[in-house]
Image (tube, rainbow, N blue to C red; front, side, top):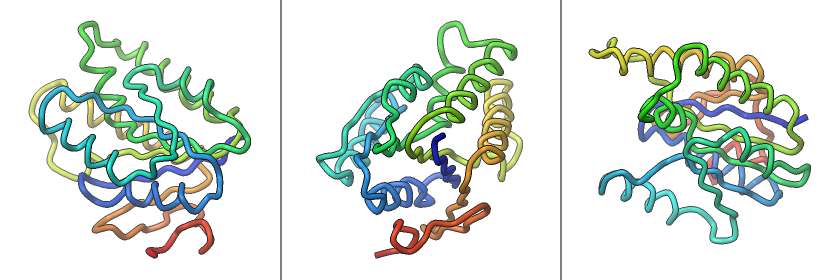
Length: 186
């Protein structure tokens, strides 16, 4: 069964950097599963920034929509999968030409939770905490915030470790890494 760590935080909070430190400190082969799509120049710049700070020997798999089959295919006992990020994956699902209805989205999230429970190895999941601000205007934005909150709650209940990152500092909400697992700043 996979050792799952959920890392939550706001935009530019340091959550991806924490996930990368934990991955480097794991001593395992790392497969970085990217969910972002470069739809415009700003997103392309964000992707390039993430790519530039990752070690060149990490394997990269792009999975903007097919996250569950990618996890199934890539997981191994001696591998750490770093998924960055779940809220982009959720955005990709909701912004398809034919977005899933509530039942289909619930099924998709249940498949993710079921898959995580049976994977070998270690999985680091990065996700935005989007429910700390004002209630957004617009049905799609409100649906996104609601679904992201539900997904994060379900993942946190299942994960062995959960961190909330603010200003680059992790607050361990559930479990905590040991010093040698990269839980502190170098």
